[in-house]
Length: 213
Image (cartoon, rainbow, N blue to C red):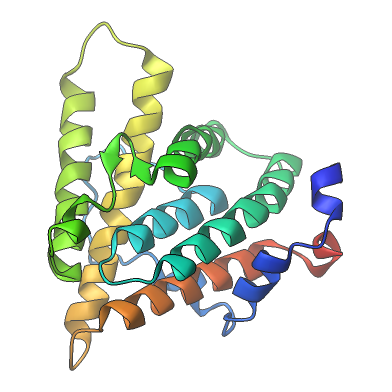
């Protein structure tokens, strides 16, 4: 393992304690959400976890310490996830999904941006979590439409954006469906915690115990 992985991933371990099993492995995607385009894209562990993290960061009324804690956990977790993903055989679509995750992560971690979109812009304006989830879905739709109409651009760059946007659309809309199915809409803190738990479940499913020691 890389030198950085030999250090005890304390933030990651704290996040993994939230896991309730493998519930989150199926919870992040709902067949009730139709694909944006007939050309379905594949998700990978890192892209799903990153997309969920971006959504969590966009929520309003979340204490800065919780935001920083999630980012620190993801930074540690992605090192392990990428190591595992790269050790597995993968088809071309999965490789592209991994590339999309790498393309997006730095801006999410450093600037709290997703494909150049300020994730916390709506929260600062006092928007509700429902409106923010709807907004993220709309932005994803716009990016997919732009991808299908662009010409004379970097194919790899635009393809990464298309894959990331497809993931954002499906996951944000799945979360919206989940919230609408509840008797009462989750508070911002409850929604952040629910998303964090899904991330923890995904990482637990992906990371064998042997990779954590």
